[in-house]
Length: 182
Image 1 (spheres, rainbow, N blue to C red):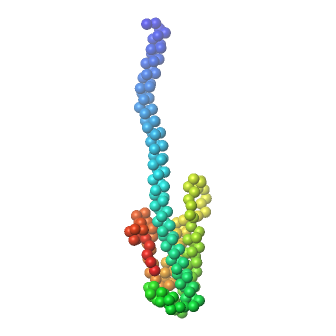
Image 2: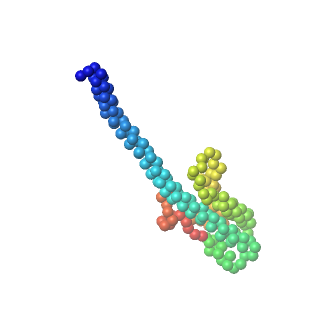
């Protein structure tokens, strides 16, 4: 062998040795990159699914408060204007409402019912998750907590028992834990 071919062979052996040594690292790197992309997709799908479930629970609770406020606002307004036999009967059978002669409680209940309606109307209907979240003006947990407090205040003022439980991760509407009636 000539000295020039020995140098080439040595360079080839050196390149082959470094390739074998870096083979594990290159497999690790390629697997890691593929796993990151795959994990990002699965995280996106799972996040959407969990978000949708939570949004349904939240919407169910807000809808309950909104419907409750609409019904009771109409009942109390009807009683205030001209108490008919139907309204008196309804109010009497709804957990023995005791608003006779208590104008302050009626006023508190009416004010809180209006506030519940305003809060439920101000809940956002869309989530633009593609937009960057900088200074979010809407604080959904605070709004929901405020609505729960107003609901309990109305129930106390008109003398009925609160019938809704707070929506949690494990509840659904078919289990009967969320919702209720008058």
